[in-house]
Length: 608
Ligand code: F6R
Image (cartoon, rainbow, N blue to C red):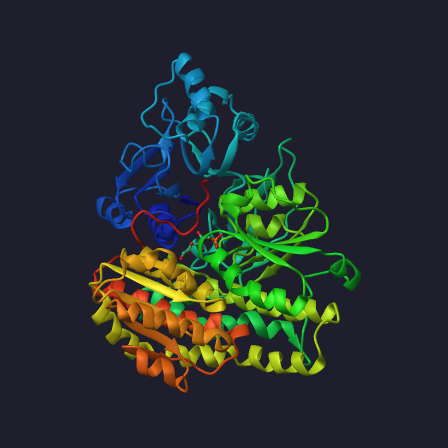
């Protein structure tokens, strides 16, 4: 999982490439590089560490003249994040430079073959085989060469190439890794994500698997595996440049937390017509729906936890059994899935390798797949039978926030949409829930308004050795996501437990002043969580409870309190998570962590 960019035009390429790479840094940030072509000569600069280092050694690109170039920001998979392993990689004759996002699965065999043929390798990467294959096959026709080369590759790639014999041109190819062409005036571009393009153009072409592209300053040709040009429609990006900038916030994560009322509104509003929820994108009849015997939700990380949070409403309102399964487990578990199963996959990026593999497995077993996805034109979006976009806008911080809340919101809306189609919800209940859906943005804002209090609490908890998050049912689902947020950005040990499970082992870890964050927003089982609060208090824990102001019993037991807006538990998760996102953020800030780029992580996990 890396980011790639390419530029061809009439101006200095390196600064444009650096600007694009900065926008892609969320995809990987352990090394970076540029290759630029000037008068038929390629020059390459690479660094380990952040793009800032690349800007420094190239004086913001000014020491690299040339109007054509490619760039890369890396999250290391094959080989350490060193300068040698950073992209671009050069062919032995210095004629080709390439950047690559993806994994070449058969690289060991190819490396042996190429070594035998006399090519020498400068890096430990899987990618380097590609550049030597280019040199080996090139006989003056770049299009044919590129096709020959990718025919030798197994795996995934978004590939960018420049060739000293092809002045003014950049080439690209895509298979199972995102790649988008940007269409400019007297210049054209490619990038792994539209965020790298919007400061230059809003007109883009989403490449499909098996597509190749040849770009000059004034032409874009997309061709297929037989070198025949293919017609592609261009799309217009409808969000503005500021959406992918910090806009005065210290971190993207804080900005994205604050954007959640608007993001949830963007998810809900277009799908509410005359007081009813309508998903035009789901062309599924009532009869087909009635034939569904179970729903399986699958995803990774926070997207999986979004599934855990949304499954209660889905099961309750539709009456269809709902299972949740981690995509990395499901793909190898030979699941009992058939044409009577509806599989819901959830993915912010739409690129997560395990999620894609799980959805392929489910489709092969005959299931229909509905995808809840944020990134337009992503692999998950393209592969699904029904694609529901969350419309959250670009999410740049590695830790997801608005991605999660909009995913859960879609699940709530799907629950109502399906329940109505199946005739399993009364008009009165539907109207009651509809009011709650339309009020979600307002309630989320009320939860955000707790920020000053959460900031104080972070000062109290940031030195803790370990934190425990407990809850039952929907509260437990939120606890899982709250604990993940805490660990990934603050590096504190944080665990979520179904409150009733504590006494089956984990309570042994509770000692004097251990923070326990108790989620008590599910009225039906609050009393039960209260008994767990009492148990941990008896062992010295400091309890921070999230609950409603009228919950007298918890008020008297907890050490600290955060009061939630009054909402029904069926849709409470998207509101309850807000203070936990803020707590993780402020704890990480207190501890001086790199919040938007946590160690060892990257935004999309395109490897297994
Ligand atoms: C955590 C986080 C990850 C992702 C997971 C799935 O904050 O962002 O756990 O949720 O890697 O990513 P997507 O949703 O892109 O499939």
